[in-house]
Length: 319
Length: 313
Ligand SMILES: Nc1ncnc2c1ncn2[C@@H]1O[C@H](COP(=O)(O)OP(=O)(O)O)[C@@H](O)[C@H]1O
Ligand SMILES: [Mg+2]
Image (cartoon, rainbow over all chains, first blue to last red):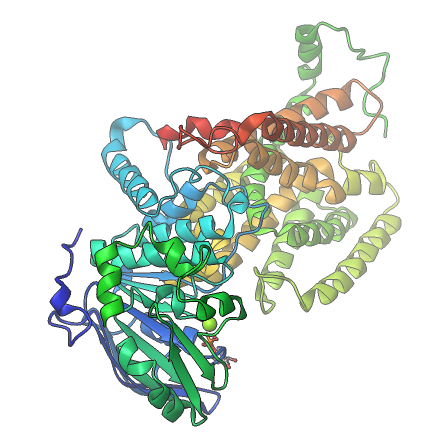
């Protein structure tokens, strides 16, 4: 496991060679430029969010990083090489996968696919002769299951796990091979608020403690705001990148979207984006939060507290 | 059709004698051999069919096998060759259709149309050929008569090839079946895997048809693996368990059909169905009797009776 990243290298200009670098990147779909001008360098252990309205091309950006979709403009470098060549050093969690309730495969087996799912052949039920490697793999699977807190339900059929439980198991699957870069596509989607906060805190913890660089597509920035190092805001034709404090501002977003956008900051550091083509940080279920100075129980920050260490939160809030 | 003359072979209630009597006939020995091969192969391939929700494809392949078998008899070839030729050809054709392996949205109407036409062709072939042994019933609902030594060898060779390929692609196929998008991101050839699997499914369907008939292939292809998956969510348990269940229902079905005037397809299907119902009942009972309970404390146990044997993995 990589050592934790010293705080001074986070947030500012990265000191280590970047895990992911995009230079003037842009993508076209059917002659239309989805987004362009994305400049980004992600250092090890950094947490980056990709934000923007639906259909703007957030998932497409992850696919470009995976090498599944070519860029029309600019360049992308993943772990020093071309996209798609880093293999097991990149973990990926695609958008909105929930397993069929009738799927009778254990969560543990799903996690294990992250380790050996692409190895040809079948594991033969041979006794200890070839056991060393298999034992090591079972230990690693248990490690990631423990890491995401899925020990209690890893042996249940995955179809019978809740959305949040499935999401944790899938994160564990993506972590199996100790990736240096983890790409997550809307992992908080379809989770309830307490689960959103808990999974966000888990991802933040993986960044800090495992030194994994995370690039995550999010529809709502608030559950992850406290853990973020930088954001990419995508808009039709363009993009804005930087720290949350730089990018999620009325001026930047108004310029980006070409319509008046207002960013309000509540007393606990939470952001509310008003206006724009779609307001990604505004959810009707947050009225209570925006109204009162104290975060009520059930809101993300409050329920995230057990997993989010206090100093971290203070540091973020002070930013 | 009358399978055994009641006077010649009556059930004696002494299982050993009964089996001895039954196995004194070479055609019965061949039926048991063929049944074993077919049951094991069907359960292995069917295990993936259940996971991939491809029962529609399996049904289509089976129905296409019917005109193949009747056409083969019409031109004077063993029906087994007809099953293999048509099922494999149909598998390749389905694999070529756009979006094969995933949901069957638009092409399901096309497949249904062609399927009905081929069924009608099969019926015509049967009508054209007057001296059919067992006639259309045997081809649609199964028979164990007239399985020769050569046919057993053919079944075994095909089964060995299919199982070898299945073993070679097993783990990636499981990955691609359960989680195609991640498998694709891992550079696994998801599309090629689904083509390969369809061809394996064609071969397995052709084999199953030769015991259960075209219309009852699910008795061996779907019911045993589905039952096994109900009993355990562990791949390493449910896969061999499905084979065991398939073998048991096939041999029991053959025995019952030998000692009764009713057809083998009925017995195999009924026994497989009974196993499935029992498994469902067992699961319901296990859930009701506090399988929800072990959550506090013993972390590692899940919601199923078999989950407890986990550690060995
Ligand atoms: N394979 C494709 N062919 C054509 N258009 C596509 C394809 N994939 C995505 N698109 C289009 O690209 C746009 C961005 O898609 P996506 O990246 O999924 O958006 P987001 O994840 O931000 O919601 C959408 O308008 C979508 O219709
Ligand atoms: Mg998307």
